[in-house]
Length: 87
Image (cartoon, rainbow, N blue to C red; front, top):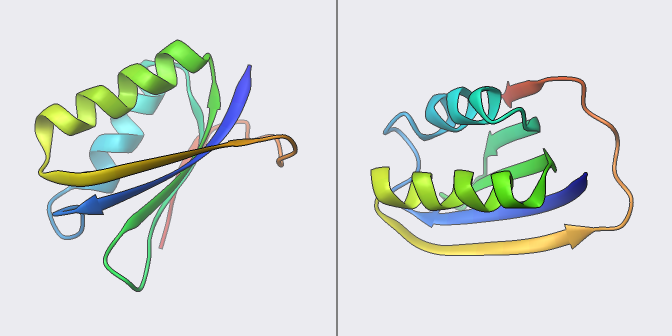
């Protein structure tokens, strides 16, 4: 199990991005959080199988107009037991 921080830019706010991310994460057994940021991007902290995490990012790219996906691997992170939307 790996942990990553992902920042999505593009048309990712006000279009159902966070709920779609939560639905996909739950289906793929990924835990963590997703949150809108003040600059118009979306932050996701994801925990799970790295291939599933990459699949989630690819699926989001096929559903939304995403300009960039910045992925940073985390060496330490709080363990999440579920996936949550942070408002």
